[in-house]
Length: 312
Image (tube, rainbow, N blue to C red):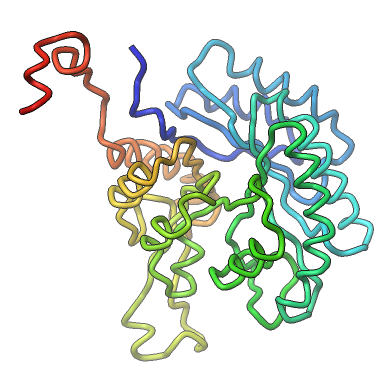
């Protein structure tokens, strides 16, 4: 019987730079991850993306693990050498996503560096209009992560898709059906935005979800504000932060979301370095619990039992 619990899978991200993503998958696949998001940082570094996809699938083998999304993170809107590599990397990922079994490519929008956010919109429309068409022709969706990368409305280096006001501008400027969000609550909490209502409002644009959380120190805010020397928020691995992931997953289900929540590690100030995988596996099991725990088939109700039970 199909397992409807896995309509939302729980997985993790795997770097495709500076090592072998396929080997990384092979090493951690038996921890219970149900999906992986291989991702590149700024460049594919000359890798054969199609071959990498095949090796990642070989590493998964016959395990029930998917790779619905791959990542390409950089700034494809500017013209420096690395930016051009990022743009070329997006094209490679779009063209070769199917080798991973992926139907979505995720990353940053890019940004005109040091400029107010709206000034990036013409360049955004130009670049992403072409990439959206390229992706649509191959049945691929594009998802923008909602990370500010230390930018704001007035200035920044990487991404304009970090604020719901920016989403309004972006989706109005380019109304491609296959452009949406790689959403996570953490980045909204860093802005002191309540993430839960966003799921209800933006559900049709949430193509992929990152499993990352935050801890807000409200006592620091009350005493020192958000621009003082004391940190008021920390990015956390799910299970160690403030978000109610039971509510998040419930809202995603109610909105009809089907896909993966891939844990984005390497940010937690406590569960890092030697404790990194300890934290990630805790997050994996925690998110599975928030998803409802182990799937229990109700064969009597849904498998041909007494139809009168359906009314009770």
